[in-house]
Every structure is written in structure tokens, then in C-alpha cells.
Image (spheres, rainbow, N blue to C red):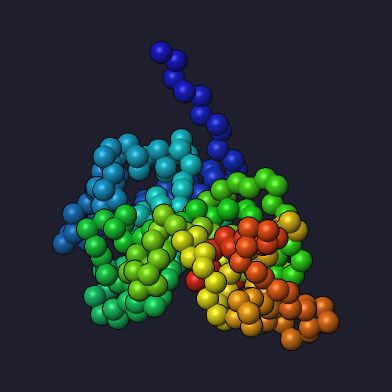
Length: 267
């Protein structure tokens, strides 16, 4: 049987692997210099990450034989005590590592904090985070944004405790991007939007992503008279961003994709 052909890693991915290897060497050297601590090995790191082939998996990530992914980066950041952006700025965009368990004086996590910033350490990282698919689709905060071809770019990690508080299930969530300024100041151009696809019933004054003949849009729904709903922009310039009506019917041009339950972006 022929061995599968692996796609060569990019220069950026190889740089990630080297930075990871350098951090491991530094941590291993620190462990050798401290007689009170056992010497850190690749096997120990892999076991902390709860991988079935601990040494082999760690070695492949550090030598650039296998490209790092977001889930592996989060696990390794905990095992080796580093911030994800120190190894992979690209993968780390939009997440923050949980605080190291080596610092017990850290405050307990806030349940309303969505990204990994807590100090609690569960049995495994899979129990701690939900990895939500991040699509390159855009929802226009303005006129519709067409998405004829949509791909998954990566994933974003969200705390499961926070999702539970929000009443959201990970398998119903997707991440997309906003485009335009009609929802400013609530949502800015290029903000990350977490969408709950299970919430397709309109709720007064909540923000939803809708699909229509002119593409995907993100608007606030306002309950109007006679069973009508208004698609409203948060931007006060109503000449540029007027209200539109939304009627629940098979003939209606818009269909609710899901409710926006979180946004992330530049201040």
C-alpha cells in the first residue's frame, strides 16, 4: 500500500513549528535545571495533551511534518505554558489561551466570558472548549453580501460553560464575518459574528443574519403592527440605511439563518 502524499507545509506553518520547538527546548532546559522537577520530555507533553501517540504527535508538530491546527495549539499552549500567538499568530487570531494552572492565585473564570481566559482545568481540553467552524462567508451590514462559494477557514474556541449560560449548543453554531457599516456602532465592518442556527424565530430587538435574493444581511428585528417585522440598521443614518419590512411567509424574500449571540472585533 502506498503511503499517503502529504502536502508540503507553507513557510508560515514551518515557522510555527520552529517556534513551538524553541519553546519546548526552553521548557525542557528549565526542567533540567530545577532538581525538584522531573525532566520534561515530548512524551510528557503529549500525555498532557491526552494524545494517543504522545511522543510521535508532539514530534510531528515540532518538526513540521504535520501542520498545527487550532485545537492542537490550545492544548500545547497549556502543556508548555505559552500564549498561542507566540507560536502561531495566524491561528491565535480571535482566541486567548486559558491562564496556566501553575498559577493557583488566578481568579476563577467569569461565566459570561466566551473565549478561553479561565484558570480552571478540566479532565481534557475537549471538555473545556467547543471548536466552532469559522466560514469565510460574509453577512452584509448594509446591502446583501453574496456568498456563492463558502469554505471553512479554521475554527474558533469558545468556553463550553459560557455556551451553556447562553443556552447554545456547539453543533448549531457557526462563525462568519460582518461587512459594511449599517449596524455600527453595535457591529463594525469585518467583525466576527457567532451565529446560533437553531434560533430562526424572530425575537423583538435581537440581531439576526438573514438570507435573501440579494445575499446575506445582518439586521435587528423590530416587531411591527399586523404581524410584520422591521429589519432595522443600528446606524442612525436612515437615508443610507432605511428600515425594511420582513413578513413570515413562504413568498418572503428573506429567510432567517440564525441569531447573532456574540461579536468580536476591533474597538
